[in-house]
Image: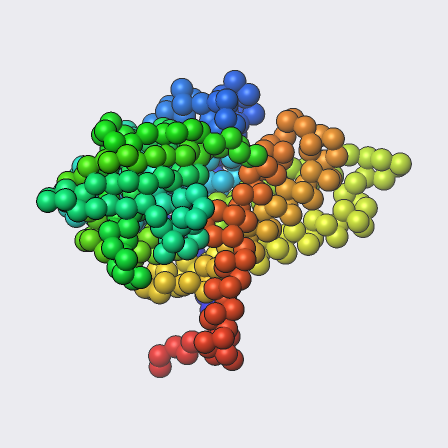
Length: 402
């Protein structure tokens, strides 16, 4: 097994690391650069994005013909981890959720005409996007089959009715990918549509207050009241919404993990710096065995997470759905991030609990990691299903061709 990364990927990683150090971390340290929701203010973000474009660090995840660098999932794992050394990092490179996952699925599934109209403006950074799937009970959440929002075909148009909630980025988005039910078929009952924020027949009911800091555009409750969409807004084809959802959510879960590893490493960076310089009762914190045990445990957890993520990325790059590998990575890295933030706050004491560092931001953000894109328990059930089907083959190494 060769764990070396290609020189081209290392070049991007090193340039991203320098960009984060020189351009983004100073802004993160300046509270005037933050907006009211705990994210980078737009007047500070746009100049940063322009610098990223100039340095060729823009949309690395997309194909060159789409406007990216074609890094593949393994290259993304390396670079996304580096980007999220700062809480402001991914959005500066146009690699933040939900645009990241939306761009990748549109690149893969949209028609050429749809790419020109709906994808290109997101790639160019002119608009933001949102993925509209989750519903209030008893509607669809982790189980899209429970979806209640309908799109009824009338002539050459679809009429959409329903309610969605916790729709990330909706308040600032212009382009939306909407999932709705078009039939009761258990496999082909859902259809994906595109719509613009200026079209009639829908509204944002509220921006839902959450415990943690927010992406640009927040998490919103959205109501559709007889929105009419022409047939050319269907992505892939009627009844293929579940397939599109699977295409989007698997890689998106993994890119979350890539970014979360960067935040976990940042937690350890802050904890390590403080422990090296803080003395108590005549002993430096870093010399206390209790601190060394905590730090060593998190360091190991981060490396385990990196291996899980890289294995899943490798599987995706060679055409696998990597469902089992992504579920493992999602469970481990989500819990790791929460643990890393907690340990770093404990080591920093009152300083960690304050806003003098970004640890409290990461801690509040980290709690959602065990919920978004499938709760821990959902992914544990997925793994158990694989184990039940595969039995001892669950752990089989694939044999290389001779």
